Length: 123
Image 1 (spheres, helix red, strand yellow):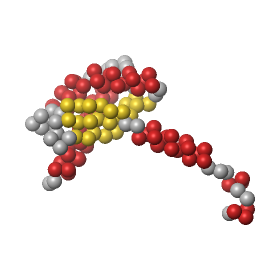
Image 2 (cartoon, helix red, strand yellow; image 1 turned 60 degrees about the vertical axis):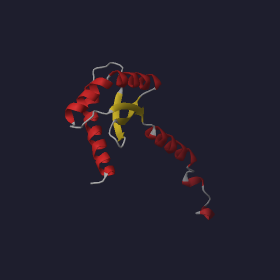
Image 3 (cartoon, rainbow, N blue to C red; image 1 turned 180 degrees about the horizontal axis):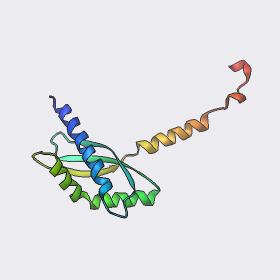
Image 4 (tube, rainbow, N blue to C red; image 1 turned 180 degrees about the vertical axis):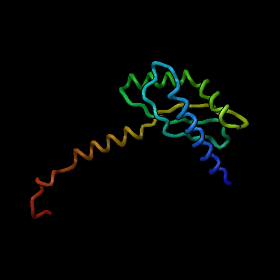
C-alpha cells in the first residue's frame, strides 16, 4: 500500500468520526455544520478539517469559535476511535466550495437568455 493510499484512508476515517462527533457538541454557538473533508499531512501529525455551515456571517463566526473551543474534545474522540502513534492536531477551515458553486450557479442563471427571446434565424 502506498503512502498516499494510507493518507486517503486515514483522512476518510477521520472525516467519518468527526462527522459523527461534531453534531453531538452542545455548544449554543454551533450552527448546522457538515464536515466536508479532512486532509492529513504525510507524517499524520496534523489534520486540516474542512467544514461548511449554513447561515449568515454571525452563524459562521459562532461555529468557528465553537469548533476551536471543542478542539481538545474532538481530538480525544479521534484518539479513542483510531489507533495511531500520535493523535493529530486539528485545524478547522471553512470549506468555501459550496459558496463558490452557488455563486457560479447564480451567475449562470443571470447569463441565460430565455429561448423565446432568441430570433428564429439564430436557432
